[in-house]
Image (cartoon, rainbow, N blue to C red; front, side):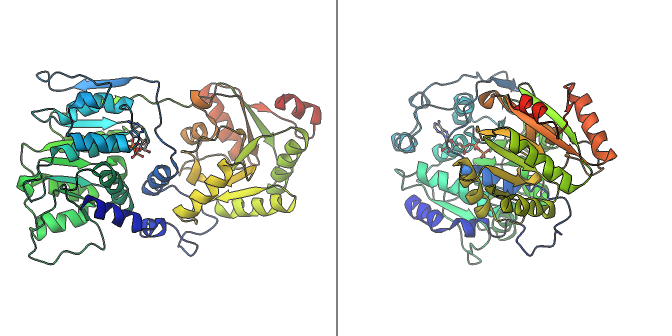
Length: 463
Ligand SMILES: Nc1ncnc2c1ncn2[C@@H]1O[C@H](COP(=O)(O)OP(=O)(O)OP(=O)(O)O)[C@@H](O)[C@H]1O
């Protein structure tokens, strides 16, 4: 069954997977000259798909324990977890040799008896999904034909992604049955679901479990809330989760995973997960060290464009990312640059996730030297070859004030990509100047004025 299930996941083209994610399509309602916005579910899916393996972290795990009676330990091998042999085989077949940093600490707790509740936070790509999927699979008693494990995901596509991991890991455990509770999956009324694991979105899960009684929520042993930060971003999801949660037995093991650790997420976590062990993988923060920052005074978009051309005319640039506020500016700029012979790619909100992946893949491969984008890409791309970042428009929040966090994500680099970089801010209004000064004050790092007509000076900054 697991194989069949995996097959189903494979049959679903990315196009299908992303349909209904609320993606803005070419004819969506958003006008081209309003600021392009980020959709967390979309970003999360994009990152999962473009990821090229585990994101290793040099930083430490922080553990907050709420249960002093249960010892906490970590493992360095998967053998040390005493998994069912076929499950271990599945883990190795996925190419996992040793647990990732978050898995080292999370897995012994997730698999412990008596079960312990956990809230875990670590950045995308550090191995959370693999950790809880392994825990889900190992808790199943396949001799009992009813649902024992529920996993809630914020969207159809993210549920399918988790399902794919489960199907792969359970490759050698065909006795474990899994089911998707997502849109498009229909179960006739009156049916009793016999699968062991259900992965789905909160609305469908609530319908099947609470409204139609297709399975007995009081028999659930493991409840997983994945991508909790994305989940609470969606209206109504939080309530649905809480309604499902209320029907679960006290003994049910609660697992809560999130890539971020904001107060809204943590408040939600505290409602869902009693007496948790909280683990966090400290994040490798971006910093502005090693980045030379400049601003250029311009009178108009044309002048901004000329500034970019002057820089290109003088210094050798590896790859560059240019950030614009709206799609309209992004496409205007890309047309101009293409006409002038630059190889340019554009990534903005009207593209489907599939199209975005294609654009990013080409850029990473170096097929285009310049990537023009909007806020849809403030985070989540680490391209080592990028040496120049241009703020064609300064990042600002809804109140049109300096958005320092976005600035840091656009310009900053983590230790892994710690090579020197160049950031140029194009300033064409007093408001933009104010934002630039506020950013400078916020980070306490000088942003110098650059005279774009002075080739010698430009040459110096490229050195
Ligand atoms: N122990 C491991 N060894 C090698 N690769 C691993 C290991 N654990 C996970 N991976 C791989 O690393 C990538 C990231 O893992 P995973 O999807 O579990 O991360 P995540 O933290 O859940 O990310 P997200 O927050 O985006 O869901 C995947 O390609 C996964 O197959």
